Every structure is written in structure tokens, then in C-alpha cells.
Length: 353
Image 1 (cartoon, rainbow, N blue to C red):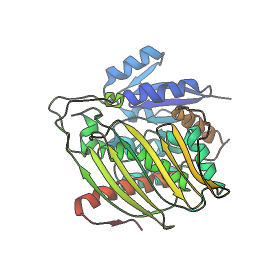
Image 2: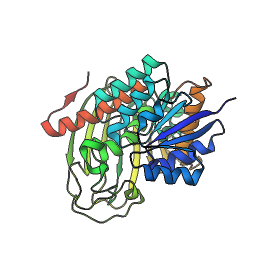
Image 3: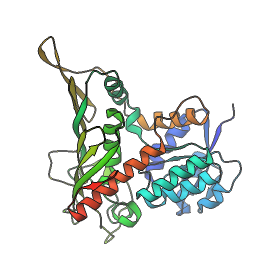
Image 4: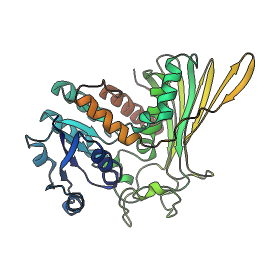
């Protein structure tokens, strides 16, 4: 079997620390080219890993007939631009989250994928963790009954990534922790619920820590800080999502807020059972023979979802699996995030249907 020939567009920290090791671990894929507007950074990656070809213009990479997959790890603004161009050129695309910075760009990606017949997948690594797979099956098999409400979030005490750089520049990122962290946990919650269709959202956003230089999170190492750079995004967002089946979801995300410590969580409640997933710890709440019971499943605490996500993408490209993630789900996600920002600005609930 021939290996998939992969070209990476964007070689920053998320590529170096997450995508690159995952591709290298897959025996059916090979990174043959890297591209970055900062060519020296791409060259350093290439030299360290024996990658022959280095570019500073993604269009030169996409023009190559011998490339099968474009892996997109650029700043958020360019996710759609690069992905659409690659799909139109007949390449499969694996893109870092978020899908795009607004719904129109996410729709362009979905339409380009449909027209090309190629695979478009955006990173949803949390779906592939053992605990997530267990919970999805637990709900699908009816053990929770009707899942009707819940909450999810990712709160950091002080963990602003790349302050002053593209992360905190709305034109390039699309927003702050809502679009950065919200994609992860909102997606996980909705996926476990069975992918109900969002119909309305409301929300508020705040910027209170733009002047803070404190950090207690390893995640603040992402991005490149710039002294006296731009900070025109939120550092905390809250919201409420309604779905077509009557279910609802509360959300909260922060890069900086006065909480005890950093943590991510999904909590869903059903008519037969509920659960709380906090970081890697899962507890189920149900009743057995008329007695209230708390159950702690013994699951592998494996954070290797990124690797499994890329392996799944390879399986889909080779026709061995149906995609767990679809571009249409990506469009719904970006519609949710965009509408929360709109609601925060207008002070009103925003309908999506």
C-alpha cells in the first residue's frame, strides 16, 4: 500500500507538538513538505526531521501533483482559505480547529469538500479519548434516558496564549477562549448528546485581564507573545444553547478568571442517569433498585486523542471507515460561536434556524 504524502501548511507550536508526532506515528503516512510564511521556522522543522521540501507560499505546495493531504495549522483566519484551495486542487484536508472564523467561511469549506469528493476533517481530538467513546456509547444505548440539559466549559485561572500575537488579535483568531477552547468542549458535549441541531443561543463576553502578565497554565506557551501587541478579544465567555429536541447546554470558557485552578468539564443530565467528566475523572449518577448510586468507571486515562483522530482520518481516506466528524457539524459549531458573539454585542438571543 502506498503511503499518503502529506504537506503541512503552518509549522507553529500546535504542528510541532501535536500534529507532527501523530503523523510520524502512522505507518501509512509521510510528511514530505512543510510550508510557513516564516520560512526559517519551517526550515528548522525540516532539518530536524529529514523533510526535504520547504515552502513559504501554500499555493506552491497545493500545486504539486504528488501531494495527497494538506495538513492545515495556520492562524485561524487562514483555515478556510487554505482548506478550500487544497480541496479544489484535489487534496484531502486535515485542519486544526476551529473550522473557520465565521459561518460563511465554514460553509465554503463544507461546499468545497462536497464538490471535490475529498475528505475534509477538522481536529476534534476529545471525541477519540476512551472516556468520550464510553460516554457516547452509554448515551446511545439508552442508559441515560432522555438527555435534556447540561453544562460544559474550560476555565483557566491565568493562561492567555501568545498574548499580543495572533491568538489575541480578533482579525486573525476570530475570538478568544470561546473559539479557542469552546470548540473542544461544546463539540464533545453535543457529540455525546447525539448531535442535536442547535436552534438558538445567548451569551456574554468579558475582557478583564488584558493587562495581566501572570501565567499558571502550560497552555499559555502556545503562540508567540508580542510586547505591546493587540488584545481585542474576550478573556471569558458564557452562554446558553438551545437545541431542536428541547435540550439545552450552559457553557463557560476563560483564559483568565479568578477560579481555584484550571479545569475542563462536561456534565450532562438525563432522565435515567447523569455524569460529570472533570479533566480525566468521570463519575456517573444513577439509581439501582431504588437506591441512588455514584459509579466510577475504570477507564484508561489516555490523552492521545490527537493521534487517534489522525489515524481515523487516514482510515477514512483509505475507505476503511466512515467519518465520525462531518463538515456540516463544523458549520453548526461556528454558527454557535458566531451567534454567541452576536448575542453578547446585542444583548439578545440569536436564532440559528
